[in-house]
Image 1 (cartoon, helix red, strand yellow):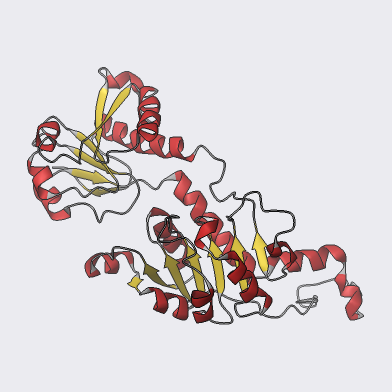
Image 2 (image 1 turned 45 degrees about the vertical axis):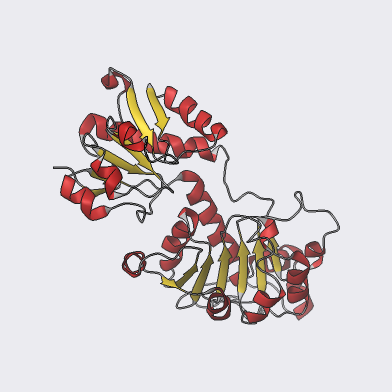
Length: 348
Protein backbone atom coordinates (compact mmCIF):
# COMPACT_ATOMS: atom_id res chain seq x y z
CA UNK A 1 0.00 0.00 0.00
CA UNK A 2 1.52 3.30 -1.10
CA UNK A 3 0.85 6.67 0.47
CA UNK A 4 2.88 9.79 1.14
CA UNK A 5 3.40 11.17 4.62
CA UNK A 6 4.39 14.44 2.95
CA UNK A 7 0.84 14.83 1.65
CA UNK A 8 -0.65 14.71 5.14
CA UNK A 9 0.57 18.28 5.82
CA UNK A 10 -1.41 18.64 9.05
CA UNK A 11 -1.79 15.84 11.55
CA UNK A 12 -4.57 13.46 10.55
CA UNK A 13 -7.10 13.07 13.37
CA UNK A 14 -8.87 9.71 13.61
CA UNK A 15 -11.45 8.54 16.14
CA UNK A 16 -12.06 4.99 17.38
CA UNK A 17 -15.60 4.07 18.40
CA UNK A 18 -14.45 1.49 20.98
CA UNK A 19 -13.46 2.78 24.43
CA UNK A 20 -10.45 0.45 24.79
CA UNK A 21 -8.39 -0.35 27.90
CA UNK A 22 -5.61 2.15 28.57
CA UNK A 23 -2.78 -0.20 27.53
CA UNK A 24 -4.43 -0.76 24.14
CA UNK A 25 -5.09 2.95 23.68
CA UNK A 26 -1.39 3.60 24.25
CA UNK A 27 -0.39 1.16 21.51
CA UNK A 28 -2.83 2.81 19.10
CA UNK A 29 -1.56 6.29 19.90
CA UNK A 30 2.11 5.34 19.67
CA UNK A 31 1.59 3.55 16.36
CA UNK A 32 -0.44 6.44 14.95
CA UNK A 33 2.31 8.86 15.92
CA UNK A 34 4.67 7.12 13.52
CA UNK A 35 2.21 8.04 10.74
CA UNK A 36 1.94 11.69 11.86
CA UNK A 37 -1.62 10.88 12.87
CA UNK A 38 -3.56 11.07 16.13
CA UNK A 39 -6.15 8.61 17.45
CA UNK A 40 -8.75 9.50 20.07
CA UNK A 41 -11.34 7.22 21.62
CA UNK A 42 -15.01 8.09 21.86
CA UNK A 43 -16.61 7.70 25.26
CA UNK A 44 -19.34 5.29 24.21
CA UNK A 45 -20.17 4.61 27.84
CA UNK A 46 -21.68 8.08 28.31
CA UNK A 47 -24.24 8.73 25.59
CA UNK A 48 -24.86 12.34 26.66
CA UNK A 49 -21.27 13.22 25.71
CA UNK A 50 -21.14 11.18 22.53
CA UNK A 51 -22.96 13.56 20.13
CA UNK A 52 -20.60 16.43 20.99
CA UNK A 53 -17.57 14.25 20.38
CA UNK A 54 -18.96 12.92 17.12
CA UNK A 55 -19.64 16.39 15.78
CA UNK A 56 -16.03 16.89 14.69
CA UNK A 57 -15.33 13.34 13.46
CA UNK A 58 -14.31 12.89 9.82
CA UNK A 59 -12.55 9.52 10.05
CA UNK A 60 -13.94 6.77 12.29
CA UNK A 61 -12.67 3.29 13.17
CA UNK A 62 -15.26 0.71 14.24
CA UNK A 63 -14.88 -2.76 15.69
CA UNK A 64 -17.03 -4.14 18.50
CA UNK A 65 -19.22 -1.12 19.38
CA UNK A 66 -22.43 -0.71 17.40
CA UNK A 67 -22.51 2.40 15.23
CA UNK A 68 -26.14 3.49 15.54
CA UNK A 69 -28.20 5.77 13.34
CA UNK A 70 -28.34 8.27 16.20
CA UNK A 71 -24.55 8.33 16.32
CA UNK A 72 -24.46 8.80 12.58
CA UNK A 73 -26.91 11.71 12.80
CA UNK A 74 -24.60 13.30 15.38
CA UNK A 75 -21.63 13.11 12.98
CA UNK A 76 -22.41 15.58 10.15
CA UNK A 77 -18.78 15.77 9.04
CA UNK A 78 -18.15 12.02 8.82
CA UNK A 79 -16.43 11.07 5.53
CA UNK A 80 -15.02 7.60 6.04
CA UNK A 81 -15.59 4.58 8.26
CA UNK A 82 -12.82 2.00 8.56
CA UNK A 83 -13.76 -1.42 9.95
CA UNK A 84 -11.07 -2.96 12.13
CA UNK A 85 -11.51 -6.30 10.39
CA UNK A 86 -13.97 -7.53 7.76
CA UNK A 87 -17.21 -7.98 9.69
CA UNK A 88 -19.67 -5.15 9.07
CA UNK A 89 -22.56 -6.29 11.29
CA UNK A 90 -22.07 -3.36 13.71
CA UNK A 91 -22.78 -0.79 10.98
CA UNK A 92 -26.05 0.79 9.73
CA UNK A 93 -25.16 0.00 6.12
CA UNK A 94 -28.21 1.56 4.46
CA UNK A 95 -27.88 4.78 6.43
CA UNK A 96 -24.20 5.03 5.49
CA UNK A 97 -25.08 4.51 1.84
CA UNK A 98 -27.77 7.18 2.00
CA UNK A 99 -25.29 9.64 3.49
CA UNK A 100 -22.66 8.75 0.87
CA UNK A 101 -20.14 7.88 3.57
CA UNK A 102 -17.36 5.60 2.35
CA UNK A 103 -16.73 2.37 4.27
CA UNK A 104 -13.80 -0.03 3.97
CA UNK A 105 -12.81 -3.31 5.58
CA UNK A 106 -9.32 -4.47 6.51
CA UNK A 107 -8.18 -8.07 6.74
CA UNK A 108 -5.98 -8.02 9.85
CA UNK A 109 -2.54 -9.71 9.78
CA UNK A 110 -2.91 -11.34 13.20
CA UNK A 111 -6.32 -12.85 12.43
CA UNK A 112 -5.08 -14.11 9.08
CA UNK A 113 -2.13 -15.78 10.79
CA UNK A 114 -4.37 -17.61 13.27
CA UNK A 115 -6.80 -18.64 10.54
CA UNK A 116 -3.99 -20.04 8.41
CA UNK A 117 -2.71 -22.04 11.36
CA UNK A 118 -6.18 -23.43 12.08
CA UNK A 119 -6.34 -24.62 8.48
CA UNK A 120 -2.85 -26.14 8.80
CA UNK A 121 -3.79 -28.05 11.95
CA UNK A 122 -6.97 -29.29 10.29
CA UNK A 123 -5.07 -30.55 7.25
CA UNK A 124 -2.35 -32.10 9.42
CA UNK A 125 -5.03 -34.12 11.20
CA UNK A 126 -7.04 -34.97 8.08
CA UNK A 127 -4.03 -36.02 6.02
CA UNK A 128 -2.13 -37.62 8.95
CA UNK A 129 0.89 -35.51 8.09
CA UNK A 130 2.77 -36.15 11.35
CA UNK A 131 2.61 -39.98 11.35
CA UNK A 132 3.22 -40.02 7.59
CA UNK A 133 6.34 -37.89 8.08
CA UNK A 134 7.62 -40.17 10.83
CA UNK A 135 6.99 -43.34 8.81
CA UNK A 136 8.82 -41.88 5.84
CA UNK A 137 11.76 -40.59 7.89
CA UNK A 138 12.12 -43.88 9.77
CA UNK A 139 11.96 -46.07 6.67
CA UNK A 140 9.00 -48.02 8.02
CA UNK A 141 8.38 -49.56 4.57
CA UNK A 142 10.87 -52.25 5.62
CA UNK A 143 8.31 -53.68 8.02
CA UNK A 144 6.01 -54.32 5.03
CA UNK A 145 8.49 -56.42 3.10
CA UNK A 146 8.79 -54.00 0.17
CA UNK A 147 11.82 -52.37 -1.41
CA UNK A 148 12.43 -49.06 -3.19
CA UNK A 149 11.92 -49.03 -6.97
CA UNK A 150 12.51 -46.34 -9.58
CA UNK A 151 9.26 -44.53 -10.35
CA UNK A 152 7.85 -43.44 -13.69
CA UNK A 153 4.72 -41.52 -14.64
CA UNK A 154 2.70 -44.75 -14.69
CA UNK A 155 4.61 -46.90 -12.22
CA UNK A 156 5.06 -45.57 -8.70
CA UNK A 157 4.67 -46.42 -5.05
CA UNK A 158 1.34 -44.75 -4.28
CA UNK A 159 0.42 -45.13 -0.59
CA UNK A 160 3.34 -47.44 0.06
CA UNK A 161 2.75 -47.25 3.83
CA UNK A 162 -0.97 -48.10 3.48
CA UNK A 163 -2.02 -45.28 5.82
CA UNK A 164 -5.73 -45.57 6.52
CA UNK A 165 -8.25 -42.96 7.60
CA UNK A 166 -7.10 -40.17 5.29
CA UNK A 167 -9.81 -37.51 4.95
CA UNK A 168 -10.77 -35.10 2.18
CA UNK A 169 -12.41 -31.90 3.39
CA UNK A 170 -14.49 -31.46 0.23
CA UNK A 171 -18.19 -31.51 1.10
CA UNK A 172 -17.65 -31.92 4.86
CA UNK A 173 -19.15 -29.71 7.58
CA UNK A 174 -17.05 -27.25 9.57
CA UNK A 175 -18.27 -25.99 12.93
CA UNK A 176 -16.78 -22.71 14.17
CA UNK A 177 -17.28 -22.23 17.91
CA UNK A 178 -16.93 -18.51 18.55
CA UNK A 179 -17.33 -16.46 15.37
CA UNK A 180 -15.45 -13.19 15.32
CA UNK A 181 -12.80 -11.88 12.96
CA UNK A 182 -10.66 -15.02 13.29
CA UNK A 183 -13.65 -17.29 12.78
CA UNK A 184 -14.59 -15.30 9.70
CA UNK A 185 -11.09 -15.63 8.22
CA UNK A 186 -11.21 -19.38 8.88
CA UNK A 187 -14.61 -19.64 7.18
CA UNK A 188 -13.34 -17.78 4.11
CA UNK A 189 -10.47 -20.25 3.74
CA UNK A 190 -12.45 -23.40 4.53
CA UNK A 191 -15.17 -22.53 2.03
CA UNK A 192 -12.43 -22.77 -0.60
CA UNK A 193 -12.34 -26.49 0.31
CA UNK A 194 -16.10 -26.64 -0.39
CA UNK A 195 -16.95 -27.08 3.27
CA UNK A 196 -20.36 -26.20 4.68
CA UNK A 197 -19.87 -23.78 7.58
CA UNK A 198 -21.88 -23.87 10.82
CA UNK A 199 -21.17 -21.34 13.54
CA UNK A 200 -22.08 -20.71 17.16
CA UNK A 201 -21.61 -17.46 19.04
CA UNK A 202 -23.17 -15.69 21.99
CA UNK A 203 -25.04 -13.16 19.83
CA UNK A 204 -26.34 -14.58 16.59
CA UNK A 205 -25.97 -12.59 13.37
CA UNK A 206 -29.11 -11.57 11.52
CA UNK A 207 -30.35 -14.15 8.98
CA UNK A 208 -29.58 -11.73 6.17
CA UNK A 209 -25.99 -11.26 7.35
CA UNK A 210 -25.57 -15.02 7.73
CA UNK A 211 -26.62 -15.35 4.12
CA UNK A 212 -24.11 -12.68 3.09
CA UNK A 213 -21.33 -14.56 4.89
CA UNK A 214 -22.45 -17.96 3.61
CA UNK A 215 -22.70 -19.50 7.08
CA UNK A 216 -25.45 -21.21 9.10
CA UNK A 217 -26.18 -20.77 12.80
CA UNK A 218 -26.28 -23.87 15.01
CA UNK A 219 -26.84 -24.24 18.71
CA UNK A 220 -23.95 -25.73 20.65
CA UNK A 221 -25.28 -29.28 20.65
CA UNK A 222 -26.02 -29.24 16.93
CA UNK A 223 -22.63 -27.79 16.07
CA UNK A 224 -20.69 -30.50 17.90
CA UNK A 225 -22.98 -33.30 16.69
CA UNK A 226 -23.09 -32.37 13.00
CA UNK A 227 -19.60 -31.06 12.31
CA UNK A 228 -16.81 -33.12 10.79
CA UNK A 229 -14.31 -30.51 11.96
CA UNK A 230 -14.82 -28.23 14.98
CA UNK A 231 -12.53 -25.22 15.38
CA UNK A 232 -12.54 -23.31 18.67
CA UNK A 233 -12.10 -19.51 18.50
CA UNK A 234 -13.97 -18.18 21.52
CA UNK A 235 -12.26 -16.07 24.19
CA UNK A 236 -11.52 -17.68 27.55
CA UNK A 237 -13.99 -16.38 30.13
CA UNK A 238 -15.72 -17.71 33.21
CA UNK A 239 -18.51 -18.86 30.87
CA UNK A 240 -16.31 -20.55 28.25
CA UNK A 241 -13.78 -22.19 30.60
CA UNK A 242 -13.97 -25.97 30.05
CA UNK A 243 -16.95 -25.40 27.76
CA UNK A 244 -15.67 -28.27 25.62
CA UNK A 245 -15.74 -31.26 27.92
CA UNK A 246 -16.96 -34.85 28.10
CA UNK A 247 -20.51 -33.93 27.07
CA UNK A 248 -19.49 -32.00 23.97
CA UNK A 249 -16.90 -34.59 22.96
CA UNK A 250 -19.48 -37.36 23.30
CA UNK A 251 -21.65 -35.55 20.75
CA UNK A 252 -18.92 -35.51 18.12
CA UNK A 253 -18.59 -38.05 15.33
CA UNK A 254 -15.95 -40.75 15.80
CA UNK A 255 -14.39 -39.45 12.57
CA UNK A 256 -14.37 -35.82 13.71
CA UNK A 257 -11.40 -33.50 14.16
CA UNK A 258 -11.16 -30.91 16.97
CA UNK A 259 -8.88 -27.87 16.53
CA UNK A 260 -8.16 -25.24 19.18
CA UNK A 261 -6.56 -21.89 18.35
CA UNK A 262 -8.29 -19.89 21.11
CA UNK A 263 -7.08 -20.60 24.66
CA UNK A 264 -6.23 -23.91 26.27
CA UNK A 265 -8.66 -23.45 29.15
CA UNK A 266 -11.66 -23.65 26.80
CA UNK A 267 -11.09 -27.42 26.72
CA UNK A 268 -11.39 -29.80 29.66
CA UNK A 269 -8.00 -31.39 28.97
CA UNK A 270 -8.49 -34.68 30.88
CA UNK A 271 -11.78 -35.21 29.03
CA UNK A 272 -10.09 -34.68 25.67
CA UNK A 273 -7.25 -37.04 26.56
CA UNK A 274 -9.80 -39.73 27.44
CA UNK A 275 -11.76 -39.17 24.22
CA UNK A 276 -8.59 -39.46 22.13
CA UNK A 277 -7.33 -42.51 24.01
CA UNK A 278 -10.66 -44.24 23.43
CA UNK A 279 -10.76 -43.01 19.82
CA UNK A 280 -14.17 -41.41 20.36
CA UNK A 281 -12.95 -38.67 18.04
CA UNK A 282 -10.38 -39.14 15.31
CA UNK A 283 -7.82 -36.44 16.02
CA UNK A 284 -7.14 -33.12 17.73
CA UNK A 285 -4.95 -30.25 16.57
CA UNK A 286 -3.96 -27.95 19.42
CA UNK A 287 -1.91 -24.76 19.50
CA UNK A 288 -2.92 -23.66 23.01
CA UNK A 289 -2.90 -25.32 26.41
CA UNK A 290 -3.95 -24.78 30.02
CA UNK A 291 -0.27 -24.62 30.99
CA UNK A 292 2.29 -23.19 28.59
CA UNK A 293 4.85 -24.49 27.79
CA UNK A 294 3.14 -27.87 27.81
CA UNK A 295 4.56 -29.86 30.76
CA UNK A 296 7.01 -32.54 29.58
CA UNK A 297 4.89 -35.27 31.11
CA UNK A 298 1.48 -34.04 29.90
CA UNK A 299 -0.79 -36.90 28.71
CA UNK A 300 -1.15 -35.19 25.32
CA UNK A 301 2.48 -36.05 24.59
CA UNK A 302 1.81 -39.78 24.69
CA UNK A 303 -1.07 -39.79 22.20
CA UNK A 304 -0.70 -40.71 18.54
CA UNK A 305 -3.90 -39.11 17.22
CA UNK A 306 -2.94 -35.54 18.06
CA UNK A 307 -1.03 -32.65 16.46
CA UNK A 308 0.57 -30.12 18.81
CA UNK A 309 2.25 -26.77 18.14
CA UNK A 310 3.81 -24.41 20.72
CA UNK A 311 1.32 -21.49 20.56
CA UNK A 312 2.55 -20.18 17.22
CA UNK A 313 -0.78 -19.51 15.47
CA UNK A 314 -0.27 -15.75 15.88
CA UNK A 315 2.56 -15.94 13.38
CA UNK A 316 5.61 -13.72 13.64
CA UNK A 317 4.18 -11.72 16.55
CA UNK A 318 3.59 -8.01 17.13
CA UNK A 319 0.09 -8.63 15.81
CA UNK A 320 -1.64 -5.70 17.46
CA UNK A 321 0.79 -3.18 15.99
CA UNK A 322 0.60 -4.76 12.55
CA UNK A 323 -3.21 -4.67 12.70
CA UNK A 324 -3.19 -0.99 13.65
CA UNK A 325 -0.72 -0.18 10.89
CA UNK A 326 -2.94 -1.82 8.28
CA UNK A 327 -6.02 0.08 9.48
CA UNK A 328 -4.22 3.44 9.58
CA UNK A 329 -2.58 2.90 6.18
CA UNK A 330 -6.00 2.44 4.63
CA UNK A 331 -7.39 5.57 6.25
CA UNK A 332 -4.42 7.59 5.03
CA UNK A 333 -4.84 6.14 1.55
CA UNK A 334 -8.45 7.34 1.52
CA UNK A 335 -7.45 10.72 2.93
CA UNK A 336 -4.96 11.21 0.11
CA UNK A 337 -6.73 9.61 -2.85
CA UNK A 338 -10.43 9.40 -2.02
CA UNK A 339 -10.34 5.62 -2.40
CA UNK A 340 -9.36 2.84 0.00
CA UNK A 341 -8.51 -0.82 -0.28
CA UNK A 342 -11.33 -3.30 0.40
CA UNK A 343 -13.92 -0.54 0.08
CA UNK A 344 -17.45 -1.91 0.54
CA UNK A 345 -19.33 1.38 0.20
CA UNK A 346 -18.21 4.07 -2.22
CA UNK A 347 -18.32 7.80 -1.63
CA UNK A 348 -20.33 10.32 -3.66
